[in-house]
Structure formats: C-alpha cells, structure tokens
Image (cartoon, rainbow, N blue to C red):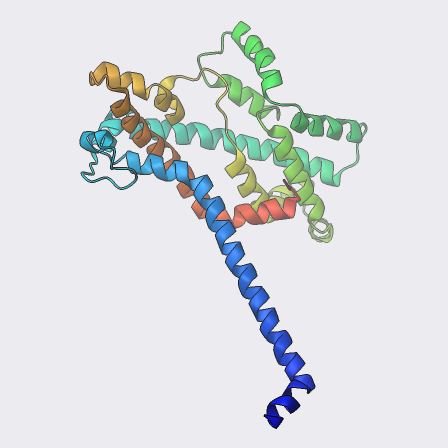
Length: 300
C-alpha cells in the first residue's frame, strides 16, 4: 500500500496516466474516423453496388421481394444480351478512338496555352487569363445553346466534327479548367530546368516537348481523367453512352420484353459495362491523378 501511495504521488504516475488518456483518445478518434469513412463510403457506393448486384438478377430474383443485394439464381444472361444489343466491342473501339483523339488534342492545346501563360510575358496577358478563368466560372449550359445553333447552321450536328473544332481551338468543354491546371503546374516547376536546357542549346519547342511536357505528366494524367465530351448529336454507334441511352428501347423492341422491371436489369448490366473502362483507367492512373491535383493547386 505504501508503495502504491508513493507511486501515485510520483511524477511517473502522472506520465503513465497521461499516456493512457492519450492512447484512449487516439483509439476513440480512430474508431470515429473508421465509422465516418465507412458511412460515407456506403452512401456513395450503395447505388453502384445495387446496380452491379441487380445486373446479375434472374427474372425470379427480380420478382422475389426477399432478394435485395445477393441474387439467389444469378445469371450472366443480361451481359451476353447487352453485349449483343450494344454491339459492345465495336462501339467500345469507336469510343476509345474518339476519346483518345480528342484527349490528345485537348492535352496538347491546353498544355501549350498553360505553358505560355506560366512562362511568357505578352500584351493583354492578364486580360486573356481572366477570360480563361471566366471559362471556368461560366456554366457550360449557358453556352450550349449558342454552340448548338452555330454548328447546326453549319450542318455539322450529326457528326463528331464540332467537338474536334472546339478542342482544336482550346474552347472545348472544361478547356478553361485544363488550361488553369497546366498553368498552375508549370508555375510550380523551377525555371532552372529551362535555363539549363537553353544553355545546352535547346530551343523553345524542344524544351517544351522533351522537358517541360515530360515533367508535367501528373497534370497530363489529371486532364486525361477529367476529360469528357457528350454535347453534340454524335452518331449512336460511336459512343457507349449513346448506345446505353437507347438500350431500354432496343430491349423492348428487339426482345419483346415489356416488363419495365426486367428491362431495368438489362440497363443495369449496360451501365456496368459502360463504366468498367473508366474504372480500369482510374485504377491504373490513380496515383498520378492525385499527384496532379495536389501539385496543380485545385481544391474543392
């Protein structure tokens, strides 16, 4: 007893007590963080999990009120049918060609403009950069109608040409954001890199393509993942998203399935097949994508 009283009155007792309290607080905060992360993840992923699960439902599962997430009589018939109805692999190839071509043009043009704003001084530079920021602030929906009317008057509404024209001139969807990302990234790179290249006899274009653009790969990855384009009436067989929008009508017309609940199961399978390439791309580029967002200074 005397030893316990002596220990309790000693500084070691206070240190031990403080250590236990600190560990308890850290454990409690860890538990709260895990609960919060799991809760938010469930809210975000719950619809996706539901779509994936229902894409494997059989007709009996869809009619069974006891089946919610895990099918009892799972089937792959939805996927085999949807692959045929969407002409999936050919449409996926067309989508990849279309998207990769636009992405390469977008990355090239926006990176050049961002590099120009970051490294060169020229008349009306601040005014022009203000226009770039204005492109970010103004919602895309406010300029869709003028663009639609312009290209319709040119007879280009049934093809992909409008997207190529807008992208080539640096005015495509989210072009302002992409230019800003590249500008912020190039401003963060030390000028000594270019100075060393110039000393070695490299020209401006060589320095840009072989040195600066190579160092800007995180920003390139960020822009690539961000990029999307679905404004104009592009032919249905070019994009998976267009095929998906007509899938339910095709199911009812071609397969004579009039039950809306069954039709939705096929649509769920189509949704999974549509987002699968995007999910694979993100998983492959996740690390560089996050690095590009951090180094470009984009928040919120």
